[in-house]
Length: 392
Figure 1 (cartoon, one colour):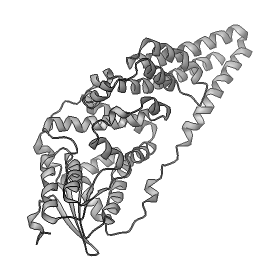
Figure 2 (spheres, one colour; figure 1 turned 45 degrees about the horizontal axis):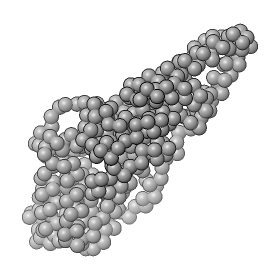
Figure 3 (spheres, one colour; figure 1 turned 135 degrees about the horizontal axis):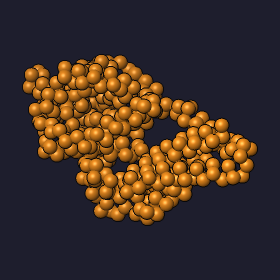
Figure 4 (cartoon, one colour; figure 1 turned 60 degrees about the vertical axis):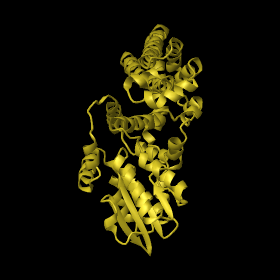
């Protein structure tokens, strides 16, 4: 341990907890200097434990380079995790884009922690909350329009060609600038900040606090440092922030009410105009719902048979709350154009552009699921209002 903290980088904050020395290294996830800060801090203080801002799933994805190749796309669709996976890929693409511009692997300082743990014998602590829990808590905390706004923001990050130089990234490690950024972020997405940042500050603080040994080094994003410092002296129960919020009741109600309402309108049309009126209503329902879902699949560049499957499935699945059109379309697309090992190998590179997202068979399947569902939802409302107007 150094005699004083002046031998450490400015990004390092020294905290004492009941006789334990904790060294927080504030990092930028695409910074060469952050890697050096972590390495030099470990060398200077010889920690018993090294904590890193990773969960088990993210660590495995970074360490095991063939992790994508092991993914079962059918399982992803069946478990209804297409949107979750697509969100993870978009975020990964954003960091890879930054990393390529700056010539450093995204999360290199995290990998350095793993490497240094093996080299020094210090215990590696994966101190972050599971990424799936975090993303689900974020997503379920948003309203419909906030979800739409966030989705557009994520997709825009793929096509934004603004260059970010190394000086800008290093300035991000300054706490005052980060606080300003977080305040701006909180104004637009207060629920996201709470669950993506604030809750993880608490989680990270407790994992670091309870790391074994009298000397601990923790490499965390600079934006988490102040929050960790605020909470690390307290013994906090993590159970409440590990629970998944219940799904909002409105989508569940609509999932059952809309099909019942559509059937009711079809029956009302029959009593108003007889069998001929009902035939036209059914034709409207099938064509409008089927065409919109097929358009969604076509926009995702789905195989022609998948587009046909979307057209056939949508009018039926829209009346069945248990199955979605995108579920059927995704499975058909995966069966017809099952991704190869090479497709999975190219995935980290392909997700860095909109063209890559659309052209890689893996992400194309995810897009088919989402866009076919979106088309079916639009078709349901358009056809429903049309049939309702005819019944009046």
